[in-house]
Length: 408
Image 1 (cartoon, one colour):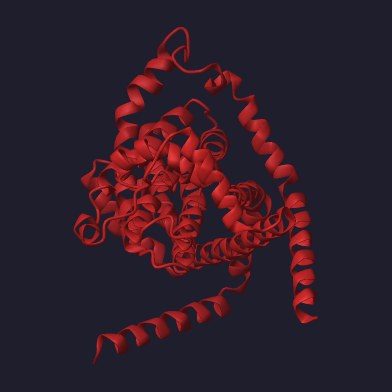
Image 2: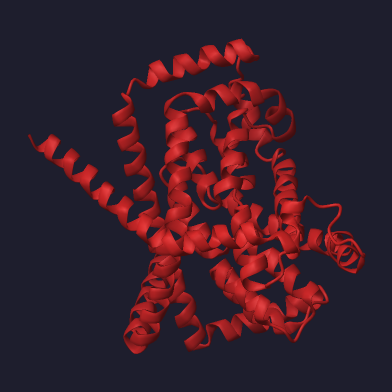
């Protein structure tokens, strides 16, 4: 039997199993679906859409290329990617997953990145945004804003280390076709390129804005589908005992790293969906806080199969391979977990036991001044669903208008 036939039969059996599980556990599947929908409707859509639209506008107006010329002397020696990678990294950090992958794919489609450069770039521009780390994880789950600085430092420094490692990826393949490097740098050259890119795009502002909204909403609809799907899968796998089987395997891995096996359920859930995994880790009170945060940090960096499936779907529109991204998530996970262990004493324990708490940390990150985090997260939670509804109506209007225009 050929490998192709084995793959076909395996996929068919998995599909039949999932369909049967949905029929056997309809109520639980509905609960998982509603949970995923609420996450997308109230938080993911309103928090990501503005960044997606703005990134599309910045690309169309030539600002990304402008920044690329300025950042070329920094990004090329460090990460072996063009200067536009600095913009992707900043937007990925500010807006969270999977913004880095979306913008990277967009730049690859415009031939601003080679395939190897795009694969390097997407590997270290996938991260959770600061609001999610401080608001949802530190304050929402652990009820301790002081943990936010440890998680954020481990998360973002870990990603930088991934970028430094991935700079060595694909050197042999790149040697056969060296990447294009800009002939000039500096502010004057960057301004000239900015104007040339805007003229080259040629779309009026109204058209560019409409395209940005349509492209962003389509991507977010796809993301919403994956969030709901993996929320349901996580629920079903728990019911049929798959989570328990995988958990026994993860218990061995946790024991190897001298971590308690009580954290295996959170790790299994986090492998599929990081929000649920981090929440379960925070609720595992039978273990120490350090162990909880280490596992939560790994889950945040690994991102879960839900986000990875979103990234795979986005990258499938280009020739960017998914395998380097998947490997980088494991590397990032181990770096993030190890850095939490290193930072725990200087950035958490020492600050907690000192008389003047968090004097080395900016005031807006102190636990007693975490009101801004809670208020911002509260605004997204309270008005996110209304924003989502309004933008979906606008998307439907623009799509219908374009359809009627093409039909004439």
